[in-house]
Length: 190
Ligand SMILES: [Zn+2]
Image 1 (cartoon, rainbow, N blue to C red):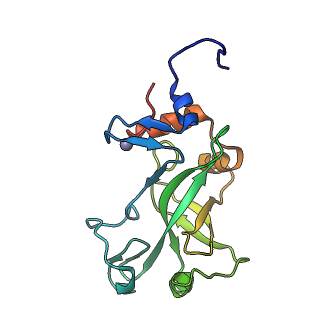
Image 2 (cartoon, rainbow, N blue to C red):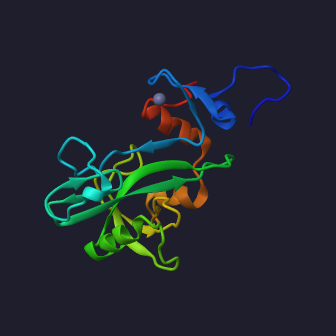
Image 3 (cartoon, rainbow, N blue to C red):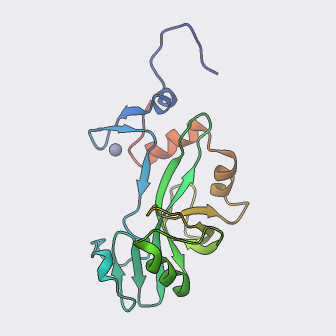
């Protein structure tokens, strides 16, 4: 795929592999693994200003770094959807939000400070953030995998034919990852 033994300008994929590149948008150097993070679920209708986690209210609208409540009816938690990239050791992290049922949300909140959750439970939710070219308006169902030690839950796309499910299963080609990062303005252009 690449010519060896010949000096050449590093491609965008080379820069991804090396793990450092100069961002065109942020005027800083980014590194791999790289996370894109959404501050709030897409349906959040206000400015994404965080209240403290311990101010949580289950009525009305509430947003903190880890919890979100809409209209006292919809409950969301911060999560991460990891996408392996072929040839790279560490995955891309899409920092996003998932719905939970009220019951599971309350259980999640109750265990949050200790970071102690049963290891064998699989919760379900809906992914609540779009990802350009991969997740549009249509709801995407996810499995919510709780983790211990105060790491936010991992999401697994539950519908096998979703493009993101295929990426999670097979790994995203590095060209596609470069394209995605460039679309958000943080990529190793080239
Ligand atoms: Zn950037």
